Image (cartoon, rainbow, N blue to C red; front, top):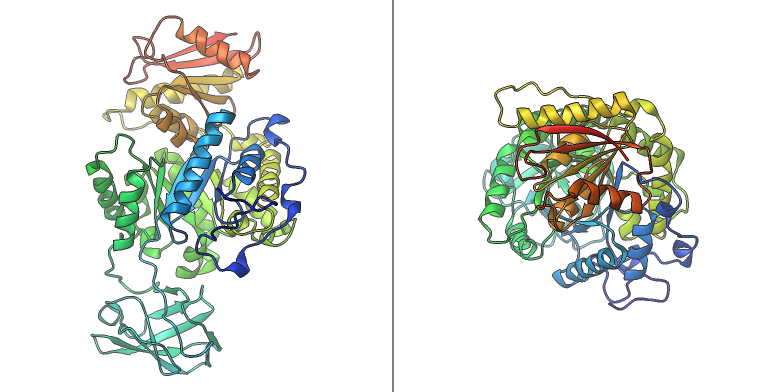
Length: 513
């Protein structure tokens, strides 16, 4: 992997224009491992990898600063770029003993305008323009839109938003075939290749485009832990993706993140949460598709729902966007990060801040310092959710895991220790938000890496978890050796009997080191 002297890639730009690629030696100063000098943070950090962060040197520093998950954005870059990042992350995990996961974000059915014969098209309120599905170079009268069924699906009176809502238009008429006449609702400049949002239109596009299907086939051969599905509309989108994943012969199946960025998804949110493995509140497109003032409460409601269902939840978009070009975030961004932690997010996601920004390492350091401050607040812990479905096949296990967290709170135990084969116990324990540290052991590296997304979970690889002989003693010795447990500390074991065998958790034990 070729690298410039300041640690940024100089051989490819992941599809970002050169003008967006920021460089600066300041990004790599004072980047000693924060995690060497303070406690493990429970709220996880996801960073989008791009030209500013793809080198081994920068990724190494980002991991030391607190990075938990690398996001590969398949809206940008090519397969060679992404494979190089995968190799570097795996190599660093091996040499550093870290557990940084890989998340791939599928582009989804992104709708865009085509190229123009001019730099931009000026619009005033009342201006008329035609969006055509026939490929063409646009002009002031007519422009191309990359949505073949637009004229079929659009209805008069619906609002169309372009360029993150900077331009609003209303559907006046459609010929039902290939042209829609629109009226501008505000003054502004229409630029080529900008994204289009259709918040009021019933879109007939499939949730997985041809590009997504190709990317999915590639990813299933490359052992990523999470796949994020963009522009989810209902639970069937998740069910369809899971079917494709399960049909693939790969042994390690990635888990699914449903990105919530459309009003249809908000309307079907409970079914989506029940069907998926995790949720991402993608506030960029969501804030365009629904009235922006609704987004804060949508965020809070979805996080509570995810806690109830035991689903990890990510808060994403514009968390520290000022740090794309500045060494410090704005005060409003600091409050946004803090409130996401207070709301109970499992993970916070960085986009342009780490993919093309000047300060990818410092951004993670500052985000970690905000998380550290908020995690000192007692009220964020022990958000108990009592299992209620007594006939469900997981009721016994869920009740044991709930009891483990209750016992941890009552006794002040330093840790809850669990051996997992599938990761289910770790997910349920995490959703209860115990203050006790969650130490999860497994002989499956893929499972452990997937758990890096979960609030409070710290994973450890242990090859012989199938052996009952002195397993608890081995685990406690590992934790003592890393100074995570000390003599006389109380800890809680969650296990199945016979001890640590694969099956339903049915026993909780309180022990002292």
